[in-house]
Image: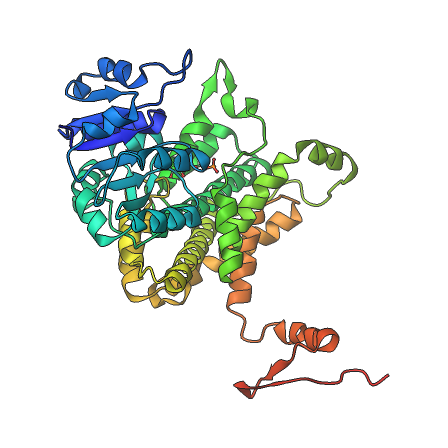
Amino acid sequence: MAEFGLIGLGVMGKSLARNLADKGFALALYNRRVDGLEEEVAQNFIKEYPELSSAVGFEALGAFVGALEKPRRIFIMVKAGAATDAVIDNLLEYIEADDVIIDGGNAFYKDTDRRFNTLKERGVHFVGSGVSGGEEGALKGPSIMPGGSKRSFEIVSPYLTAIAAKDKNGQACCAHIGIGGAGHFVKMIHNGIEYAEMQLLAELVTILKSMYGLTQNEIADIFTQWTSSESNSYLLEITADILRKKEGDKFLLDSILDQAGNKGTGGWSTAAATELGVPATMIASALFARYTSAWRNERLEASQIYKWDGLNSASFEIESLRAAYQAARIINHHQGFHLIDEASKKYQWHIDLSELARVWTNGCIIRSHLMESLVDVLKSTNRLLINASIHKQVNAQLGSLKHLCALGNKTSTPMPCFQTAFQFILAYSTEKSAANVIQAQRDYFGAHTYKHVDDPSGPSHHTIWNND
Ligand code: 6PG
């Protein structure tokens, strides 16, 4: 009998299967049959890799489930959305109480919550699990964020922890996140943080090219130098590689169309921020920067009619640029963890932010030196920017961020994420905000009332603003 089953042998499914087999688990693998297109996928895949020699391949779901030990542990790795529902519906014919289904796709957390509750009625455990690290991570050790009941985690954790990446102390980058949709919620915000981290790096490339006049190799060298600093991250490392990559005698980057795609998790993160009332401005800014890039024809037209003047170039110390970058990253992480904290309270997930940061120290796309340092910081605060040690760090960097944003305006260099970071910290640290004007306007035209500054939790007031 097989102890672990896997459904869906796309790129990620295959890598996870090889990783599980490598750890010595007896596997049953299933891939659907589509005549002429997908035939004997599991069987052929098993033949390709020696580590899979004891795995068994199926294209009949009943036989696949029948080959699994009870309680059955079934990992689904199919396209998020309707395909996941279809697989679960089909499985329901064969599985029984105490079996565990793990969905490792980038599912929408509210779908995960719905599936969790529907399957619970039948006594079946549903684990919505974030899995990060791409193809290579899935093969060599991803970061894994399982959500679901504690009991279901106990049943599947030996397998998930065995294949996960290891943190610097050798502990698995996998932990029970919370019930229902918690695992997929944090994976969604992981991706949101990823969007802003990627956008900041993309903006740095523009800044170093247009403001500093540097070549791609020179920029790559700077990024490589930064990998020895507190700014080190997986995304920084890969961006240095990308900058150096040539096709023939041309930089590959110059041949790549400047229109960013997305698969939805950044949009979902932004929607969650609006729903929870959390100012995750950097995720939103990075998402909208992608959308702006995608309207390419309009951009080309606008570029013909709007002409920007100002300085052609400007530069300041590279170390100050790095400081500005680091400040913006801290603000991004502050907002991402704030969003998770609010969702955790609303849905009573009791997410341990420090443990989540630990799970994100290796295997995932946003692993970084900063993330490692946050494991400790998040033990004593849920709000990074008002923690004393973070304040000390960021305060020393904010002058550089301010200077960079000013130079960006002087040279008409688009840097939406850097500007958003600076505007956020300005507003966040303002004692008297402009919101009294907003409240007065709301009361003027809509009698929405306002609170008195001397009595913030006291009665609401309404004023007749205009007697005409
Ligand atoms: C990961 C990645 C992975 C994927 C994103 C990309 O953690 O391994 O985040 O999930 O790369 O889906 O999302 P976009 O296509 O929206 O950029």
